Amino acid sequence: MNIVKCSLVVLAMIAAPVFAARPVSISIDAGKPGPVINKNVYGQFAEHLGTGVYEGMWVGPKSTIPNTRGWRNDVVGALKALHVPLVRWPGGCFADTYHWRDGIGPQHQRPSNVHANGSVDEFNAVGTHEFFDLIEMLGAEAYVNGNVGTGSVQEMADWVEYMTADGGSPLARLRARNGREKPFKVAYFGIGNELWGCGGNMKPEYYASLYSNYEHFLRAPAQSRPKMIASGSDTAWTEVLSKELKGRTIGISVHQYTVPTGNWDVKGKDLGFKEDEWISTLANTMKMDQMIKDHVAVLDRNDPKKTIGLMIDEWGTWYDEAAGRSALFQQNSLRDALVAALNFNIFHQHAERVPMTTIAQMVNVLQAMILTDKEKMVLTPTYYAFQMYVPFQDADSLPLAIKDNTSYTLGTVTIPGVSASAARARDGKLYLALVNTDPSRAVDVAVDVAGTKLQGAAGKVLTAAAMDAHNTFQHPQAIRPAPFSTRAAGGKLSIKVPAKAVMVVALEK
Image (cartoon, rainbow, N blue to C red; front, side, top):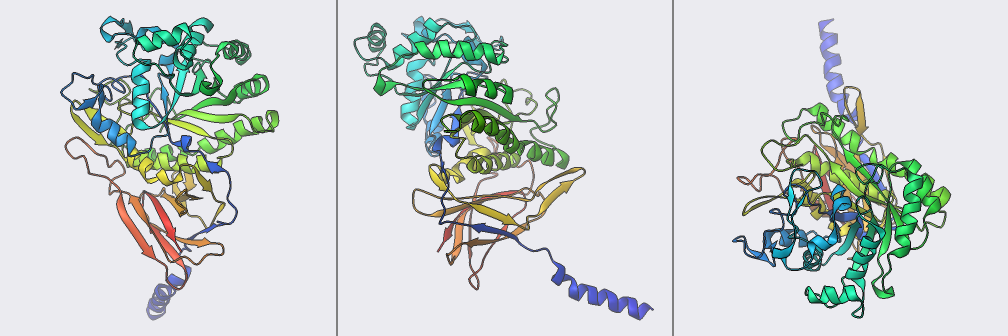
C-alpha cells in the first residue's frame, strides 16, 4: 500500500502541469475602432484646500523656491510631463463660497476671507489671472466653477464677461487694467458644485430651474463662449437635469470617491493597511463601472442624440487624514496607482458618454499627483499611472475581450484578477494597459490582435514588494515605473504581469 501511495504521488506530480491554470486570453479587434478616448478623461482638479494650491503649487514671486510668476517651477514641470489636458478650479465646495472680485487687482489690496471649511484663511493671492497663467504654462484647458451657493446670477454673469468679453466691455477694460487685454479662454464653465449638499442643499427640480436662469445670462462672444456643465448627484438628479437642460449644456457632473471601508466616519488608512483593505479598496473603486452604467441608462433614455456627457469631475481615494499635515493630506501608495489605472480602464469602456473626468486632486490633497514640503517635491505612484497612460489621450478605443480571467478572492470579496484596455494612439501604435489586482500572484496574459502577427511588446510596469510602497522626501524614488519588454514565440505573444502591478505596453507588429 505504501508503494501504491508513493506511486500515486509521483504520478500526480508529473501530471500537475497538465492541470495548470490557463493564461488569461486577451483578444483585440484593431480593425473596428470605437469612440475616441477624450484627452480630458485625464483632467486634474485644483481646489483651495490645505496646501493644494498655496505652498503646494503657488509660492509667490518673492519666494526663494524657484518659480515663474509665483508658480513653482518643479511642480509645473512635472505636471507638463503628464500632458495635463484640463484643470478644474477653484472648487469643489470652495467654489460656492468664492467671490471672484476678491481675487483680482493688486495682490496687496485683495481681501482675506475665512476659507470655505471655516478653518483656513483664504488670502486670494491666486485669482483669475493667476489661474489662467498656470493654465497657459501647462498648455491645458480651463474648467472654471462658478458660485451658485452664496453668489448671484449677476455676479456669475459679470465673471464670465470679465473673462471672455472683447475690449469694448466695461469689464473687459477692467481686465485690461489688471494686466490682461485679450480674453481668457474658458473652455468649460460649471454652474455650481454639489448643489445637493455643500452647494446649497437643493432639490434637483429647484436647481434645474435655477440652472436655466444662470445659463441664460452667462453671455460671451461666440469665439470665447464656454461650454456649460451642470452639477449633478445621483440618478434622480440626472433624470431631472437631462430632461430640463437646454442651450450650451454639454454635461452633467457627478462625483464618486473610493473609501476602503465604505464608512465615511472611519474611512481607512493610507499606509500600513492589511490585505482586507487592499481588496476592499479595489472592489469599491470598481463600482465606478456600475455607477456610470446607471447614469448612462438615464441619459440614453432622455438624451438619445448623446449631446450630454457624464463628467466625473471628482474621483479618487479618500482615507483618514494623515496626522501632522495639512487638511485632506494623505500618503499615496502603489494601491492608489492601481485605483487610478482601474478607473482609466473603466472610463475607456464608456468613452462615448464620459468625455471628462478630473481626479481629486493635483497636489497635497487626497489622491495627489505630487506632494511637497517647502522646497522639496516628490512624485506619487498615481503620478506615474497618469504618465504611463498618456498615450491613451485622444486615442481610438479598441474592442477587447478577456477570456479565462483569473479571480482574486479574500474572505467574502472577489474581484477580477485582470483589468485591461486597448487603443490606437495618435502616434499610430497599438497600446495595451493591464492591471493585476492580486497582491501575491503574477499572471500570464496571452495577447492576440485579429489579423496581426505580433512580434513583441515594450513599455513600462509599476509594482513593488509592499502593497503600501510609496515615495517620501527622504526616498523619492522608492517606487517608479521600470522598463518592460517581451518577444513573441512561435507567433504567440505572452506577457507575464507581476503581482499588484500596472503595465502599459506598445504592441509590436
